[in-house]
Length: 158
Image (cartoon, rainbow, N blue to C red; front, top):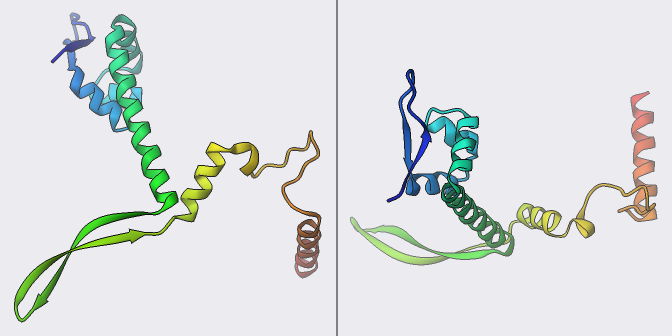
């Protein structure tokens, strides 16, 4: 396994070495460069210098982060669409415990759907009002209703 020098030896400090597998796993867990540097007890600046000195180290960290991002996207997509998973349930009958494989279905999660749409298609699903173009995301009836509700609340407060 390839190793990388993260901090060179000096009079007051010892040399810090990390292997490629560890760096890739840490990046794959979604840790930032600062968090990885903290694990090795070096500064973020020293960590960035080590990446600049060794291009292969930067590629390994990038590869780990790519895997992490891919896994997050896949799990978010499966939550948004709904998914099935094989599970084992246990039942007790007359003192005997039996295991039964069951396929459990998880329905689509509305929060995951909204998050996916806002990030993948922000032009169609954003919540902010685009005042430059004069377009609003609520219809006139909805706007009138909201104004009536606001007026009602103002009267209640006074």
